[in-house]
Structures are given as structure tokens and as C-alpha cells.
Length: 242
Image (cartoon, one colour):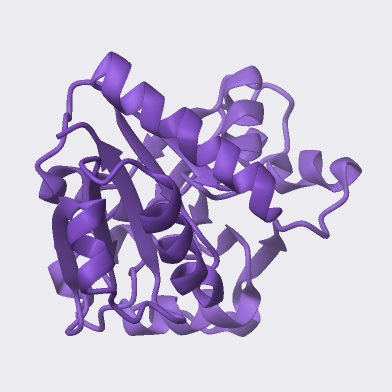
């Protein structure tokens, strides 16, 4: 490959992964497998799970010939430019999400922003997003919504944040979307049913696209009477006005 400074940049492909379901054909259009098999350089969050997912998706290249860049909380800022070095020389590279679509509750946005600054074409591939799947299945407002990621860990701060989200849902008719670390889901449900208005609507969407998928929207008062066990289950929570 030429390393001439006038080389036309390659492309950065944003590759969605599974949310936990096993059938890759259910979440990837047929052309994705052939396209991804053309790549031999990836930016990933976790090497082991990335390799496992690629194999399950039909990736046939030997991993001994594949270059992986790790993008996670341990990545130093000075490493980032090197992730796109080969793209600037004309090579296509894939950015692979750990779960669902890249750059949503995912560190990939720093690479995408860098790609735009370097005039690299960014190509998002079709795939699942737990946030959007939960939204469209909730029955809540899909015209105006906000995703807040993880809520504060401190109980008092989390309670204040939940009240803020509830107020936004009622005053602006805006769906409020957030998530929690799976082992704290049950504690969050206690906070939701204990601190919010009994008539505030709450949707719980967990294990999306898997055999144990569960999605239900009802008032917090109704949830209080039938609390589900969400311990260690990947879940999305949505609030809206009654």
C-alpha cells in the first residue's frame, strides 16, 4: 500500500454487534459479512469479546493477520492518532462496538470525531441499538426524547436526578431514557417506585433481542406491586407522563 501523503483516505466503518442474541443474521443485513471480511484492522473495546463476535459473525481471516487497537478507559489520549494512521494512507478500518451500535453509550465517538476532523469518510452500518429498540417498544414520545446514560451512584444525587427527569417528562412531554450497571438494577427499581409520582409511566426493557427479552410500560404504582428481578440483566429504563 502506498504511503504517499497524497493518498486518498480509506473509510471508517462503524460496525454494530449483538446485544446478546446468538443469531447474527437477525441483526445484520447479508452484505455486512462480506464487507467486514475485507477488513483486517479494527478499533475495539475488548479484544476477547471482539474476536468472539467476529467469528460468530462469519469473519474468516486469521487473527494473527489482524491488527486491533484497544479503545477503552485505559487508552491514553496520545494513542488515538495512531488508530487512524493507516486510514489516512488509504486503508479501510472498522470500529466495532462492544454491544449494539457504536458511539451510543460507547467510547467510539472520540474516534469518529477525529475522523471528521481528518476528512475521513465515516460509514455507519445498520444494526441494533438497545436505546432505540426500547424507545420504539415503549409507547412513549418518539419525537422528543433524551438519553442520559448512567445515573449517579450516590443515592441522594440519584434521587435528585430522577426527579429532574420526571419533571422533564411531565413538563416537556419528553421521554427520558437511562440505564444502570446490571447488578444495581433492582436497587434502581426500588428508587424509581419509591421516589417518583405513582402515575408517572415507566418502561423497563431488558435482554433485548434475546430469548429472555422483557419489555413492559406501566405506572410506577403498578411496578411497585410486581417488581421484576432485573439483577445482572442488561436493561434500559424510560420515563414519560401518564
